[in-house]
Amino acid sequence: MAKEKIKEQEMEQQAAVGQSISAVEKFFNENGKTLWICVAVIAAIILGYYAYNRFYTQPRQAEARSQMFPAEASFRAQQYELALKGDGNTLGFEQIIDEYGSKAGEAVYLYAGECALQLGEFEDAVSYLKQYKGSDDLLAARALACEGDAYVGLEKYNEALACFEKAAAKADNMFAAAYLKKAGLVCEEIGDNAKALTFYKKIKDQYQQSMEGYDIDKYISRIENAE
Figure 1 (cartoon, helix red, strand yellow):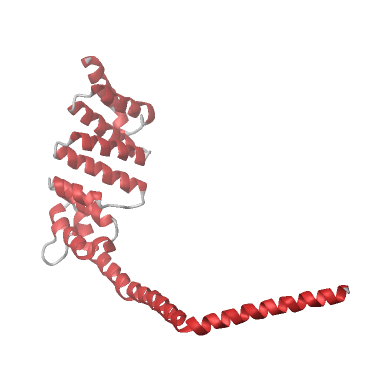
Figure 2 (cartoon, helix red, strand yellow; figure 1 turned 45 degrees about the horizontal axis):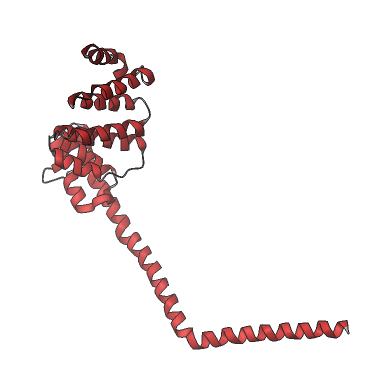
């Protein structure tokens, strides 16, 4: 009796499997063409992406980076106008951004922003620096500080202060002292001596061995004596 029950269960299972297989076969018979079209489209998309990346994006990136070398050399030589605008024979960062955008690497926006800042083109400097999206914290802090300097040039002190504070928080090292000092000077410019004093005291407490830390006492004394 038990054997008959087991055999009956096995037959029921086999029947269920058979029905499932039949259902799958029926589905493929009815929708096979559509499924193959979908597979072909997905394969074409994948192959297209690979081909675009391999034969267009990567060569463009290599070309863009090779164009960066002369501009970088001019930047290191402090020839900021040549580095930014080129000379007709070599491209400057300005033309590289127009031609290649971020394919040249995120650093191109930082370079261009610093050049524009040095040339007193503050609006352009802000525009370039805002486009910098590098992942390195030190360079990101530097970009923010340069943006702050550009806002100072535009006399937009609140925007400058925000940039310097962000730069100091992101740097979190000896460079932070320089950014804190810039923040303090901006606070003095807008008449917020109490806030300036907090920045200066932070330099004294946390970054005493920095260049800014060596003479920060005179900035602290200037505010305390004026009160």
